[in-house]
Length: 137
Image 1 (tube, helix red, strand yellow):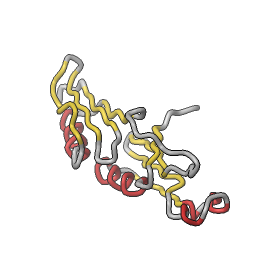
Image 2: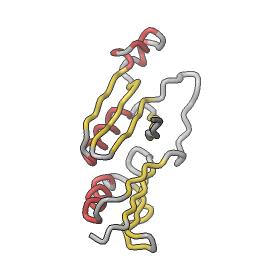
Image 3: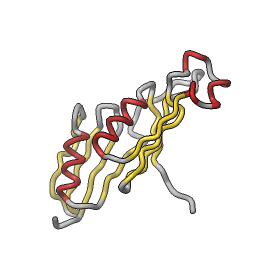
């Protein structure tokens, strides 16, 4: 079965970003740096400290990421990728929102709207997050 996994590209900040997400959301983090992988033979030594693959998985969370590994191209920052946390209880959603709000730009504080509890923010790494639950709890 094909599954959709959110994939994030960071400009040298993949490891601290994924560690932060793990501290907020839990789960198991597997992280491989260029120098520990087969990619080391294809990339300059100055890039061996960068993350070639990271995956945070557990409790319904599944996020994959890496550092930008194309030296001939420049990454473009934007909100083209959005993480969407939905379902669960209002209490659980508020805990995630509060933790991810650390150093973030909160664009939509958590509030009751027509489809339940909703909020959104751009975290301290520039990643857009949306939160929603229609739970009565």
